[in-house]
Length: 133
Image 1 (cartoon, helix red, strand yellow):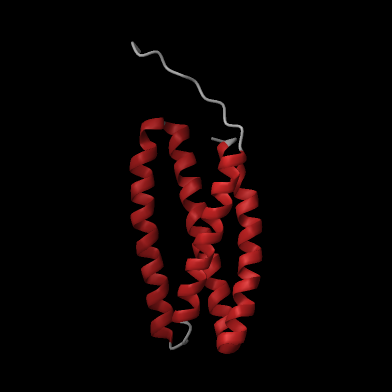
Image 2 (image 1 turned 180 degrees about the vertical axis):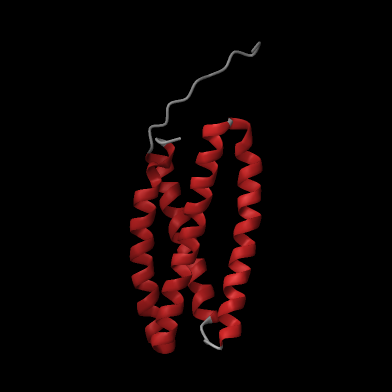
């Protein structure tokens, strides 16, 4: 799994760039609060993706068959945490829900695009299993 986690560094680099870009767009569209909310949204998406990778990698070290259940539980937990985070922001009176939501979308697109490009360029060895195995 260490080789397949090689996309984390470029994903975090692109997420950093996306966070700055989101902050600039948020600043122009909604002032300083919009800048902070948009950048926070990108960070939230990036940490969610990275958390999933780390959880699945940990499960794989224990037993390869645990990766799917851990991925599903991590996904559900991550959505719950996102909901809690957005609920806290909304109840705080800080009016950044729209910039934050756009930041989450932008961060997810940046992360997934970077991961996809890495995957297309990666030299991942594979084996063909015998049909009788």
